[in-house]
Image (cartoon, rainbow, N blue to C red; front, top):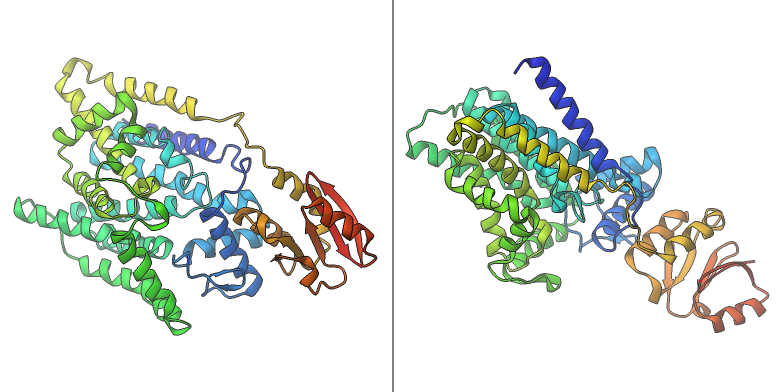
Length: 458
């Protein structure tokens, strides 16, 4: 295939990935917990100007124990485009598209451009890659998957071509992966070590010169943040080790438990009936041992860990896609007569699956808090602070009110105990409380939406 055709396919895949991942990205409500927590960390960076310490509710966040690279990018998005669902999810979606493109190039470098096309199309059919904690929510899993994939791709090129620039790229990508999602971003290290060990055992020729550059660049990326963060409070680093490594490996945190077959079911459910047998075929007949090591390390570590969550497997999907692309190539070699048409057949089937993934008219959950927020918006934008009943403070609701008011939202148990200043807002969600406040000369009623009543102190 000519260079022009390869470039055309690259642009086509980039456009397809962009359309699918960014399509109606801002429609669904912000998800509780992780997506909300990430957005709140970024919002606090914008408000405080402190780019080193991530915060939740104005206090250092010792629950979301991730280095701040993702929060930095989200904060930059807030500064440029304001706080919205689109700016919360933009970076995750962008890294999703970039992952698709790296997988395309990775597959091309293994055999030919069709391996890359098939692997890229495969990723665009995987719900786990696109859904919750994937490319279409404001989480850091797609970001770390991109850096892991890029680091392993650069490592592959380094041992294949012997150019130092690839060792440098692998180290930088691994470092940024760590700064995105802690130790998960360091997966390229054991994968690279095991691959080098395999090459040594099999006496295959490879280029090792310049590996020190990869390690040096990794240290140069992560050390400044580690030193700076430790200097303003070592508890964060200590908790990052205890909770994100030690506890997650030994305890099913937050009720996320499962048996040794947990991730097997995640794989089989996402692959479906027609892709799973092909994947098994690829495992046995694929000669790309780097991909098998990648698969084994990620799958093995998370299987041994006691805390089990399906999106932990996100870094595995590029390897699975590449294995399937190579497997189809191998299948074509075994079926000589079909060799010419087999890649095209799978590309066609993949495109059908992609079309089924496109949500031109997605179901949007009815969220009356979201409706309340939109109706309250004109009033809240004029307030410095708003007080909300503690019992209604789901994380995503609290964040959205907090983002709209200059000095943030504050939860309360009993509004009578508050010292509310003139111009500040008060929301109640009880009809009896509403009747009391209507009679109170110190408050003016502004608006009711569903069971929420908004007052302002006068």
